[in-house]
Picture 1: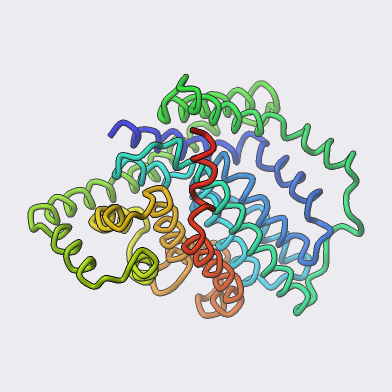
Picture 2: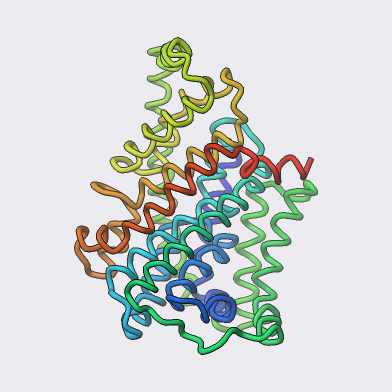
Length: 374
């Protein structure tokens, strides 16, 4: 599927953000918006992931960036290091949901749905994840005394000035969505354009990207892309076996025979994918879970809604033991133990589970924007 070729470009663009100066400007803008709230820097952490989700698309890249940029500063300002890591890991899960999330492209490719529809479907669930995490951060900050970083709310003039500084980042998002919506570019071409814009902005506009940085980005991108495509190849082979063994047909007959209905089926999928996401990489689980797609279609579930539910499930799985990839990454980078991470992050995980239930029971959160674009 040609849409899969977009993944290397979006991964590379996400890595380039760390060297162009775009990330630092977005962080300043996030601080202007929410720095006055309880838990100041933790709120900035959540909002920054949401904003960068429109440019990054990878939870691993987002988590690595914020572990280096924000966690040390949060610790200096009195935040518990484990809580800082938990906030970073939780907020990083927003990136795969906000376009151009790699998981959105992957689902669209394996189910032959529109990439643009999946992109548009990700916005509202991503914003919902941001809201519930910010509420959880507010609760924990009140309880543990994590104060705001700004004495008072930023003025409209200050916020507008911060928005102007983020002009190029916003322009990239607009160019990508307009290009896809108008049919001027495919998802792959859009990813390539995004990479070119990143290099242009970093070298010409902000002058913070140096040629030597491109070598580092290329090495990191190669490793990340190799990992993703290795999983895709392995899972595709497994998918061929499932087809040969007629597992999809048997699974369809079994579930339809249970007469659980659309909501019961989605709740069953939630439980299955949450458990699988704890044990296996999210991309692999998404590919392995393809046999569930025909069942969802027979039950009359919107394919876009089903995809968003699956991706949100697997994102949460990356945050939970025993093998949550994002959890392990943040624990490793921040040098903390998993039990302490879970102790400090339990409210954040609960908030994401609430968001999952809301998206499950309210399909319009996923389907509204794609329907409006048609």
